[in-house]
Length: 290
Image (cartoon, rainbow, N blue to C red; front, side):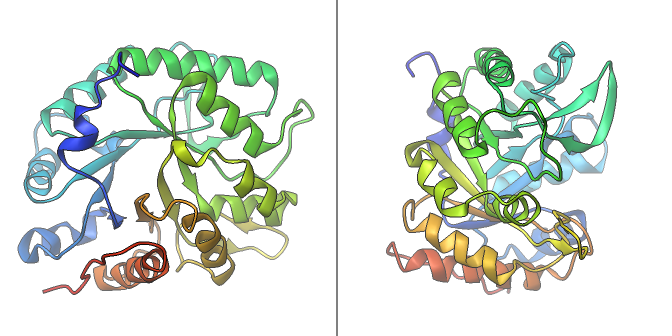
């Protein structure tokens, strides 16, 4: 990986359990500066210059390591890559020393129209080749590896010929990218589509996993929805422990995007993750909010 600049990955180490930064908590965080190891920010909220949001980003980055999570690259789409979008990402990542960028194994645009959802791909050789090419273009432009996240889905394409875990693993190998493994999404797809969790976890290339996500789902009766509006469910915690014991030093993030509770409630979830991970590594973080 000599062609990639790994400096940013080491300047502000991302470790322990961080949380997704959400607007209701920004003032509290900037006032109290709680002991939180790192934050993940939705990159798309920070691409417009001027106003309050860039100022908040600057203040957060002065005190905490930060990663970017993107929903706008639309890597699985056949639309041309938005180079203007990529240029803005590259500029702001450099400006604020963002540790890394993650995106989803999906598409979000069709013929220039953008969806508000992460649309899944058929797991086929054709899709794999397309995704490898798109990720390679993005990494070449940014000058560094990106993280690709597995997504939740509610249907299976007739064109699918590969298991999801095999697709993700082969994608990481061929594109020479890194992985963000969302444990809740694994469970959602297990319930909705019957994927084999044990096979999924053993198929993943542990050396390429650089981040883990935890979130809550919404039980709709006939299916479960990846809504990020509840605490992490007990079966998801069990999958997390199975995964994290293989990669105990890989950082974890708590996502809570809807029906957002108090900051302390989210930090309580982060502490649960720390307790589990700490069984397999030394050290711990203090999540008490001052």
